[in-house]
Length: 125
Image 1 (tube, rainbow, N blue to C red):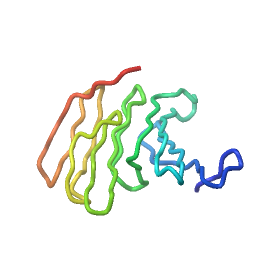
Image 2 (spheres, rainbow, N blue to C red; image 1 turned 90 degrees about the vertical axis):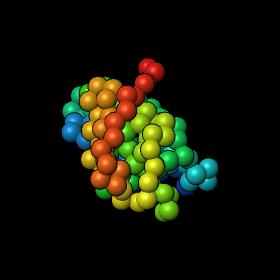
Image 3 (tube, rainbow, N blue to C red; image 1 turned 30 degrees about the vertical axis):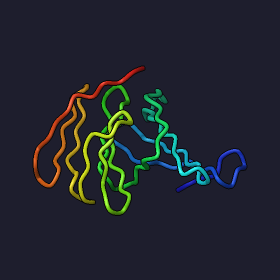
């Protein structure tokens, strides 16, 4: 359910996904084909992290948000699925190949085509 912000026709706020108590919001700037993503903890309203990105998360694609509000998500451009964490490209594969995202602290795990993978995620606050 998108809503227009500030009266601008080319700006929309939408939910990019939910993981536990965390919600990933996406503010879309349609003319510029870019997105501002931010995480908010439901209930407390605590802000997590903010990302300016060209990689749009979609509801239904894998998403993981850790206890500090750091997000890892999958973006799909039609031919390629990209795994991003803290707004950095981590892995890629055909659409549907990247799954089972888990982000605990700075340790990210996932599968790509059924192969288990992992990485340490560096974030700046």
